[in-house]
Image 1: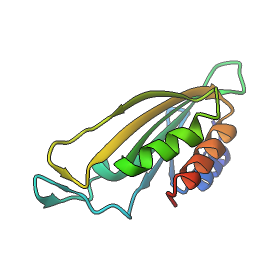
Image 2 (image 1 turned 90 degrees about the vertical axis):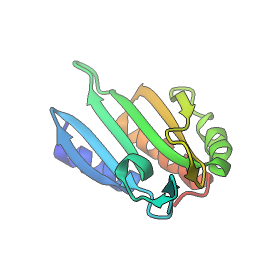
Image 3 (image 1 turned 135 degrees about the vertical axis):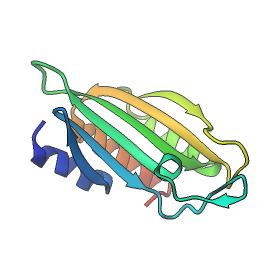
Length: 133
């Protein structure tokens, strides 16, 4: 995957791009979240980051697109409603990671095989519709 395409994906998703083994990784911290776990404030990337990977498929223009999000409980359903309009994107998991977190954080995983630009734009649009800037 080209560096220019990876940078464009990061721009669309408002994140930081990194190339690894011909794969594009994009991360974005949710700076609007100020969670605590076991009563301790944390800004760990393990807790507050959106993560995306775009992996080329040999002899295809499409990529394997994977994503993990962190949401507040009230953001889950609006995002699901918005993303469900795209039949190529699959929700593969919705779960919590932590015990005793405040506010309650919910994590969601998505996957698709499609144009990486289309995937990024669909995600960006669904995040906007869910009220996540």
